[in-house]
Figure 1 (tube, rainbow, N blue to C red):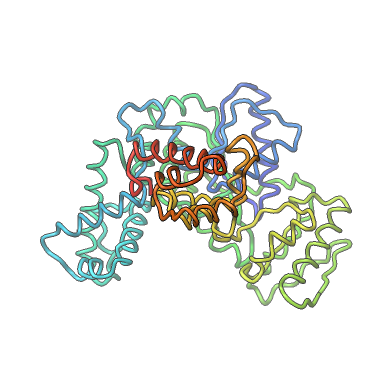
Figure 2 (cartoon, helix red, strand yellow):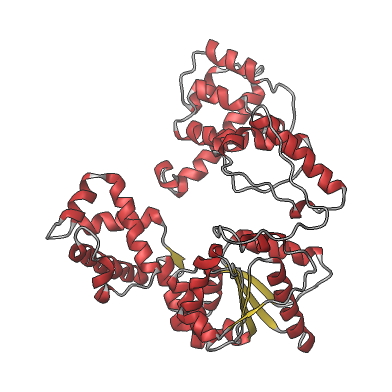
Length: 454
């Protein structure tokens, strides 16, 4: 069960695909699992496969939670759903309300609504850490009231167990059940190999699951972030954990990619004032620019991205790094779109800055409040609604005129007012649209109330 390490991902990816290829040479139909910690790494591996000449059958690319779900396939008693915060938070509130003895933790959580969510986060962290309710002791000694928090955690664990009768559990409970079911899992019995890839900071329940799986299926763990300098110390802690010890001594990945180790060589010297700078790469240069504002700076960056791409560098191998992306958020999409540059980013903007989600929110409010006049007229002006497509024609589609007619008709709110008070001939398209949305609202409210949908 080898443990393969590398400072970065490039050589580790080549190692992964080389090992997959070796298994496939022996049996092209062999079933394999590659388990990764994030959706971004998952997307990266899929793209690398698609851009290569590889064609794999039976290779399952899964993040850790999906891996647990696949292991549980075929378990007739496994909880079928993972409860979210919308269920766990009321569960915790009820649990605290029914406590006969109240200490400082309970009183504080009851008086400060935001503290309830923080307390739930702590309990979920303890569950993810596979903390035994009977052995918390020293783990909680630094808290204000360790005994009370230990009691709350024990009660919370029992409450989660009580949900299993209704087919529910939490994320940690699902993984724990996957560990217990592993010896009987049809999915695991079909696997020829498992390749955990890209994670050096796994929560304990995922480590426990991989350790259990390693006893049943040949496993090769591909671990990034392992190098010589101080920057790698945090990742190196993984090598002290039971899973890494069980896998055996770490083996450095072979330098298969043929690409210069530009970043990893420099990371070895990060936070080490005594280290010597690595030699410059052929053609390497650093350019310093000044720019009058965030937008101008982004435009300069975009021009250099285009210049690099024109020399043959694939776009997905070009990175733009900033200390913080916040000053650039309002310009990022507009600037890169103007240069025709597709991009992915860790930066996030509120959904309501985009016309589609904003129109959807307005639609929900209009339906929930039974077509209030001003909000309905504003909704119909949104281009995201694509009224011509909804109606099947463009004849008579004029939101500004609809707004004027609804004012003259004295409409306040209510579907019936829109239908009964508008002139039928002139407003035929508008009445048709109101009826169409009304039927949708009827279907939604048959399932549950509007608060229930929320």
